[in-house]
Length: 182
Ligand SMILES: [Cu+2]
Image 1 (cartoon, rainbow, N blue to C red):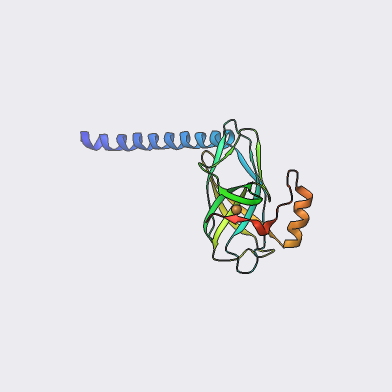
Image 2: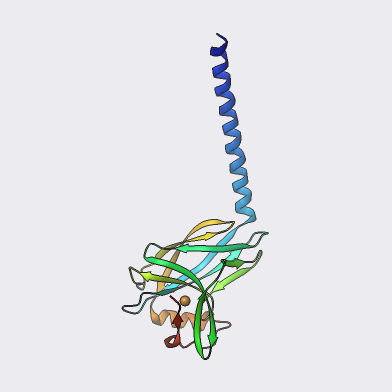
């Protein structure tokens, strides 16, 4: 009799404990979203040239949070590998290098990935980037977690026009000299 009485009480206690846990988790998640709010805007790429196995990705990442965040990984179904690259000039040649330890997005700041500077590099493409065929990529942030981002794909012509429009710190990059450390 005593055991029969205990069982429902235990069950109730466990149920209560579980719902309390859920409430706590939901609250923490809400605060998390607020504190580490990372917003992605203006994600685009350009069509790849025939036979190219790599394509760039450009976007603006804004950190509305109080803490710095880091873009630690990027994945896309059509790319065997995605890296965050920096671009520097070395002996008159543009050298791209993967960013080590992730790309920092300072609190209250925005980082713009654009042609001529930091960019995403979609590598080992199984499918080219085709104009007007957007593709998805998943960006993983240290604090903000995973974000699925849709990249618009522009034609060469559109992307040229856009670079002229939006470029603030771009010094005419000769893309024929781009070198990839793959
Ligand atoms: Cu690159």
